[in-house]
Image (cartoon, rainbow, N blue to C red; front, top):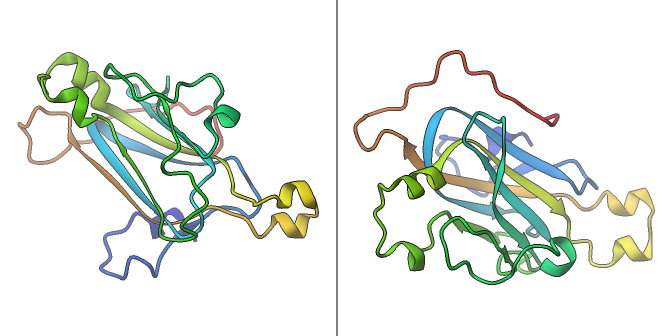
Length: 202
């Protein structure tokens, strides 16, 4: 079940296609290397299996040379990300760990929703300010799944065949944004000669 199954323009039932990770593997990631600079606003992921017990969303704005974490998600933030605050940010760009989207229910069709600009923090802000534009600007997006829900099996039995029944699977991923062109373009033009930098194997 390749990544094309969640990033598709085909007019099919959204629950007939999905992406699935390798069985029994906890650390898995999906990375999008874009062809130009984009203003990224939000992402919605709909899972076929249980949502990850822990995950992060990262962005790069220099074609993969450096990365910054946008958000942390975990059923137990203190255990998965002990150094990250669990309080809602008071300033733009601050990150925190959210538990809302990491529970073991529902068992299917659960969503993870992440907005770059929380409505409570931008009501009086200039949407075209350099602070907001820098926050929205991306050239690469990476979603890291770091922990599976295994319901105690990892403590009760370490047999490989038991671990094989757990994996990440996603029906759909919606990534919203626009060209970083301040509203003066009808389409996004790829940047010529871009060399992506990667510190991982895809």
